Image (cartoon, rainbow, N blue to C red):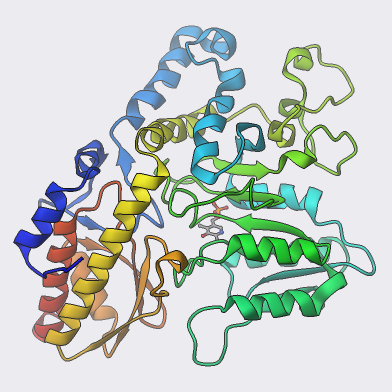
Length: 428
Ligand SMILES: *Cc1c(COP(=O)(O)O)cnc(C)c1O
């Protein structure tokens, strides 16, 4: 498509956008009395207007039914989380039985590692990407130490090449081959949080399994953002948070995937709790654990329904729209943003370097931009002028125009504010 850096052109794209009406269904913060341009849906998605009703429903049931709400509310709490399996399975490409919703992301990865990181004297290494999200680094280090190994030796990081911003699949495959039968687990972020690079999850999963390792994915930046086929890719396990692209609210419940080949196994190592036992006998309070026949066997506690309800509200929208339509808009709006950045770059004495891969299959909603010659002051200028972005040292801004609620006109307006901020140095 031939783009133009004009308001009229941006508006014409909005008019043709099948998702444009969804913008009205989200709550936007305001700066200077004006709705913000929101680029941080990769960090905390906006609140859908229908969320309040889902939360109120629980609050009202609690008020009116108290303990009876577990069984007699319209959406009974005792199996409330099961309502998410079907819609979520569509988002991540799984069977509903392979999905469960519980806890939070880092907690879930730890719990899944109990099952899928089973080091032995010979096979104990974990492969991850260098500069992984800090929580993942702490998690991997503490797991390795817990099993009595030295993180410096047991954790192998896939490296980028000198001077390059992104990982090359061939280098990832080479590392996998090198570690070979010493590798117990591969655990990588499916979409890199810093650069927005999307990994070739299918190829990497197969390569990891070919050397006899288990393969898990941290999908924090992938769920609701990129096409996932977890079942068909034969992924062993995965987990993601729901508050980034999935708009379910700060710190809310996390989703997990456990491939069906691990279901119905009584002897699989696993930390267990009463919500993982068979539903029909759960309240007989028997001493033996009878696992649920699906990913729910990994559940421990009765579901935190106040944290799960906003996730269900958000999934209603994902079901209505579907990942395919979301991804179509995502591709177009990200390309338009890229074009706007290039246009503004030509007009000012500055150099933006987009460090996110250019190929569509290697990127999702996020563009990470190196602002050479600009500093933190530009970031402050943008924030003061109603552009919500985030800043990562040394001077990278991350821009994620979430397709549900960002408009093409937002992209145009952003370009204008950015240009003004750079030209008008007195503002700095
Ligand atoms: C956001 C994010 C997390 C956050 O973990 P929580 O347990 O939800 O705080 C973890 N890993 C990655 C890769 C992330 O992007």
